[in-house]
Length: 619
Image (cartoon, rainbow, N blue to C red):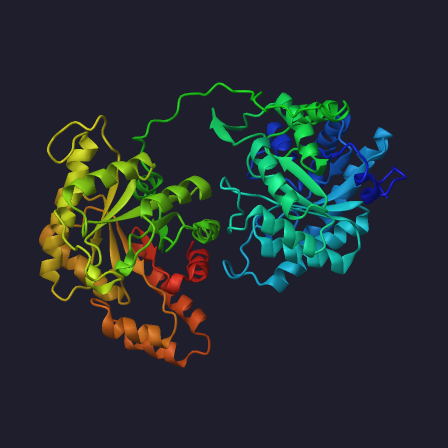
């Protein structure tokens, strides 16, 4: 065993001061020139000296627990690098490597096996079943325990159900001490909306020996969450491992603002709040560890430090706001894009929407379309959702911007608000009539039609003035889409309408769902014959069929949608409607791929798992 101390791990936790973990492994690996596209866990096999040197630096800084370099060494994350069959090799190498460094130090240290989330979404927000997740955790944990770790650390989990499966897997393998640690968003909840008190209670009930909080923001947020968790389960043991503040990009590098002295200030604050284990997460270095070591080795001060000793870094010039959007760049370079429509929540909780957006991004979606009050149902304003998806998930959005229900004052105010929230891609539509929604008597007027709104955005706002010509301070930089119907009942009317939108300045078109690619091509050929080739990229709508009743409803009741008998029959005869609907959608994508700029998926009934499946198959 790597443990050279005669004191069992859990026994040591009962005595002050708190045990000190090491700091960030990924930060240190990247600082040594390894790109984020590499598999950091594989370095245990290919660059052991690099990993050993990092372990040694943390031990020299005063760490008492060394964490193996195995955070992503599970079959799902390793599969991204073609290494899914080397789970055992990589985990065993991580343990052996850390053990050798510990023994060479001649210090009484503990060795912890590091286990991160699988990197895939579990049901109901993903497609991985709980049993599959538990099996993957069991595989990694078996390798770590067999190699001789003293304790297991499950860290940076955002899904409570996932970490509970990891705990179950660990208990099936061994009675080794377990630390279960989750990460929180800026609103002090997990990504799926669980507050600290609930997390602490559930982890304690599931048998975690130590309840952890890691990553998240910096020490200040970590202290706040720790106090809430400790109040909920006062008899539990707690572990904190904050980031070095919120990351930012400076000169092309990821930088963290919180310096070592700041972490030293907070070491005693964490101790007062009930932590028996302390460490550093993303952005921390051996210097941060050493500062905490010095603090823990001094007597506990009578009062808490105020925590204002932030180390600031010089900011470089930020790129101007009028840079082309990623969507415009991809379309102009003729990359085939995939965008998925999402509806805002009906209430205040955005966690499920953000989790689904993250799943879609992981599947390969280029952009998320955020609809505005679809079917005239009351929902959260889409600008807020678009901003949250962009800021917290990191994927660009297209904001649906209906003209219906907005007068000219509100249209312009809403455009300024969207731009201030860094929403640059907008999709101009008429919008659904209020008569079909939650409030049929609500005002349904509008001052501007879609082509007029396109003109207002492109020729006024993007030129720095409002509708009346008054200066708005600086030009906006919107990239504007318009609606198109490629299978209209009266092609001549649709050609006229589409031509008007293009003349107004539309940059791209999103279409209604199509099920007959040949008919769509016929319409485009007719447009070209009368107006010339369509001058803007077209992103074709694809609506996956959910079941026979759904297909029948679309065919009979949705204006402009006609589903070929072949597809209706396939949905009627299949034993697996979900899979058949996905197959049909993928077939349609492949048929339109040669002559469109991309596809616009409209998952039925909020089935974002279906959309993710399609994205993965076509990307």
